[in-house]
Amino acid sequence: MRLELQGVSHRYGDERAVEEVSLGVEAGELVGLLGPSGCGKTTLVQAIAGHVRPTAGRVLLRGEDVTDDPPETRSVGVVFQRSTLFPHMTVRENVAYGLTRQGTDRITACLDLVALDEQRAAYPAELSGGQRRRAELARALAPRPDILLLDEPLSALDRTLRDRLRDEIARIQRETGVTTLFVTHDQTDAMALADRLVILEAGRIAGVDRPRELYHSPPTRFVASFLGRSNSLTATVVGVDPPAVALGDTRVTTPELSGTEDLEPGATVTCHVRPEHIVLSNTGGATPADTGFPDSLRNAEEKLLTLAGEVTRVTDVGHHYDVTVQSETGTALLVETATAPPPPGASVTLGVARDSLTVFD
Image (cartoon, rainbow, N blue to C red; front, side, top):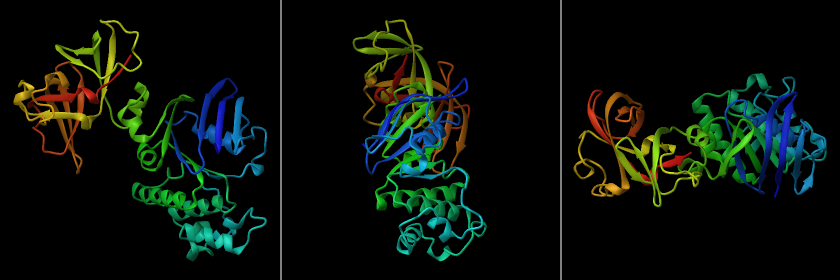
């Protein structure tokens, strides 16, 4: 294990920043630390780098406890959210700063790695935002750190530049193999980059897994709502063997009632479903066999939750349509569809495969 946090907690006075955070990052792994502003991400970065001494818990690097060690002894490279380049130094001088036993070849290699060799004599004020980020990345990598910490490195860039630099970070991490913790509040960046995601909620870990697993099988309602777009429906437990819920007059069996093993029939639960997992048909009131649902769902009512509704809004976002439907349960649902939907006011039938439902207490 290259990096390990064991029960790390930290408070600023009476304010809790992080609470009992335990996680490990393997050698060569790129882990995304994702969460909303104020959830404790930067505090964890500072604890790993040595700029904050945790109130409780331990920080281990390469199996050694470094909780009390100063930053300069930890072999940790950091790229902070705000630029920390020295304005009076050239790009080459910034990259060379702090190198004691490594010479010109190492500096040139790092500048080549981030495609800044031609800007080696430029000053930070002469660089674009993306070039400054790459210069900071080269400086962090120059001492060959065991751990690279990237604290919101893309936050100040426009979307086009973010995407380009995000791809560059992925390439550089692959080429160097450096163990990396990438901190962000942007779901797209985290999903695109990370081998694994660690999601923080109010200073605690809410979920850890591969991005796709967390997206399709969120462990908590917070993860479901924070990671991507989500619809929530209030339902009633009507069976436990097999598990089943009812939404209005519709009953549907579910693959499992995650985290709800102790619930009895009559209990209220929340059903989560992604907008792209809802199938839209404009034959309002029809049965599943009569609608435009896929062949895998038609004539299989036990596999399908159907709800009647009315289209209230259609938004063309280019590569798909966002359709808002007021369902018969009184809940407005967002549907994502690639085909042209019926107009506002049209009666529709919504279909959700039971495998697409996640149920929370």
